[in-house]
Length: 495
Ligand code: PLP
Image (tube, rainbow, N blue to C red; front, side):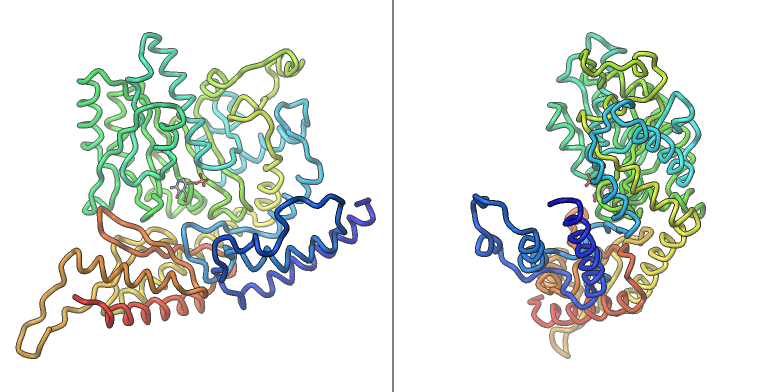
């Protein structure tokens, strides 16, 4: 493809993307394809000779689009959103047009310099203390691929810091602390690094948040057994319910364990820190006071197209001391002089995408107020859903709603088996069976998507608002579907 052919194909691609967005509302959310469907449509070997790009572009529409789950669909309520924007898309397009691996300052100075500035903008937007800003020269922010990478980087940095302070510590004694509600990123970091992970129990009556006493007991127990606690992954906004670990209580415990690195995973909820009214609830003061690292994903609820995970650390040297390996061919005058950041030493890989461009495009286009308006709108839409659930006689919230997330289940009014017998409430197991039937019905649909979860054995359904196109109408439509599938499930349920 030459430049003029690219111009033509590029215009067509943008046209087709616009048509796709116009058509989104009328599409299914969940595709009607079976596993392996694509093998029936495209050859299983690459072509011997190059093909005409028009044929390739047409095949995208014929075979790939029908197999997509549409995360930007207004009735996509599953997992957490990946709210994207055209500004973000264009940022990715420009970034792809200048593919460079941006691993150090010299490899493309603008990439490092923009990331440096935009990470400070983002820290400002979220109310993070100046200690985390790149401008501080001590702390700083870096873009990572995902929150899982961010957590892994934090664990590597924490381990290295701990080992420097305790050179005789044995690796097998080091422990990562998580809770039963922490994203699997904690267990995965342990798996990758060959470290023990202790998952602490959290209770439904505590809204599934980690409490100080639970942490203290576990730490005391482990230290008594010769183990070495070196990092706690605190979650601000858990995946299942949006629970927020009790940071004030954790802070009190952490005072007695100065070697314990505190990593805050706020992959989804962190975006709500942009709105001052949510900051107390999300413990911003404590994050600023004692977190060693903090991660949130602009690619979830932050209007930036996947991927764009932001990680801040209080002391950048903990990253570089853990991750800096500099062979001669990577040395530069600026790096040697220490006058620049070489981001290759702040993450796992060497090369890195130019992600700050799309973040910059989005933050400039929306401004702080536009960003806040979007977050508040999602929270309001969720509140609307909450009210509808509360008005229903057979549906109930399983936990308090969190920001733009609701977790609910079918809890039918007790019914009498016969006119002469008083109504009896269903057992825990029986209610779980009912809710599995309910979710089975919901997940067999193509016009909406929600996800399931289990809270200490209680089967529930989650609804997360976030797609830019979702309106009250879609929320009401979602509620009508939920209500009718709940009724249908109750009908077939053998209590
Ligand atoms: N942390 C939390 C609280 C999440 O909810 C999720 C995903 O939903 C993740 C981490 C994982 O994010 P990523 O895919 O960026 O690793």
